[in-house]
Image (cartoon, rainbow, N blue to C red; front, side, top):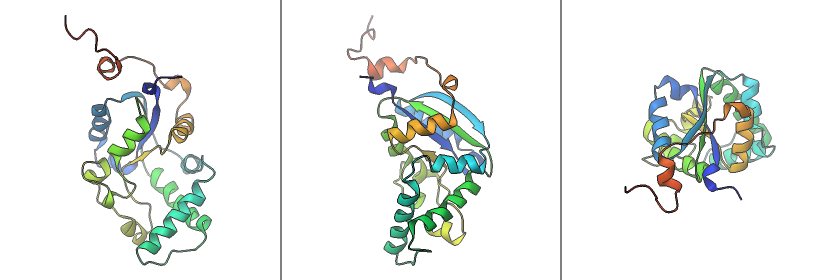
Length: 201
């Protein structure tokens, strides 16, 4: 069985994150966790690549539509449709426009529980309700309501993988095997060495 330190996750700094000059701040949050950056590139994704990204999981559209409808109703608002596929189709068109509007920084981070710890430090999808101390909670003020009123996708700085399986699929879409680097960093001795050998002379 592979060691948990080999787990990988995808992070995209979206166009709004780059335009806000938050690359260094976001990267430093993940570095301080103890994760290792093993792939990075800047690109302007096509709308078709964005759609492929969000529909890698065939169930995403149904799930997204149901979640959006539920959110509308919890706020006492009428959803644009009761059909989850119609609602998620609108969301997908907004995401195609949003992520292809400018450069995106794509990264792969590796380390124990990489998917879960990146989710924790990044915060929830909606910046308004994300916890203080998270990337989205600290650096963005957008909300679903404001995005809906402006007829656009919510601006939340980053995309992060939602599960280990999702991360595996997304990494394959954004990076080739030769773009993923294998190397050691000094802090891995402290994070993963069972006996903390070699600290004292």
